[in-house]
Structure formats: structure tokens, C-alpha cells
Length: 131
Image: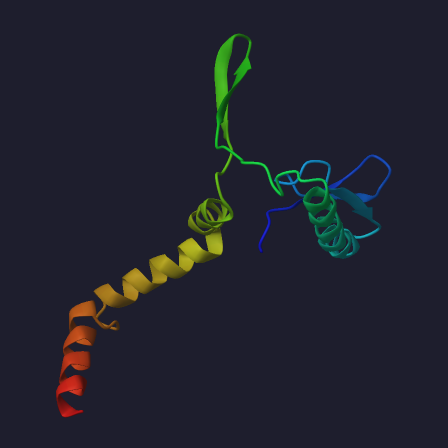
């Protein structure tokens, strides 16, 4: 199973890891890596205890919008994500390195350095006919 975790630095200099979809599943580590290792064990332990007690293994998360106000006016919107895939897609579409690669690929295609999808389909069809 895959779970979304959060890791943050607390006021004591420790890294706190939490699995939001499992109530109470929290641990710490001296480094981010240690906190991540510890949360893996904590997740296993929490799931085992919840199963023994007949509790649901996880809770459902929901995506919500929170309007942040400043002096009575909207200053921004904070969004949550319904799934790890949504979070990954958001990160990917807002990653400067990824966006630069997309721009470069588009320039290459415009300059004739790319291969069109139609050409790939045609090549696949010809290959299939030869087989």
C-alpha cells in the first residue's frame, strides 16, 4: 500500500513524520531520512493495532479549499489534494525543470527535430504488417 506522509521540522530540531490517513500515526527522527524510516514502521504498527481493535484502517481524506483573508479581503486560496496522484500531478505541472523540458521539446518539434504521434502510429502499423 502507498500512503501520503508529511515531514516537518519541529521547534526542537527534530523531524516529525505523520500519515494523515491513519489517525494518530506520528513519529520523529533526527533527520528526514530517519523520520521517513520511522513512519514506515509506525504505519505498519498503527494498521496492526487498528485491525486488532476492529477500527477502519484508514480515514477518508477530502480536498477542500480554504480562503485566506487579510484585512477582511481574500489574500489567497489553500488547496488540499484528494489523492497522491493529484499531488504528484500538481507538483509535476508546477515544476520549473519539467516545464523547461516541455518548452524545449515543443521548440524541437517546431524546428522539425521531433517525431509526430501520427508518424509513430504509421511506423507501428507498418511494423505490424511485416510481422
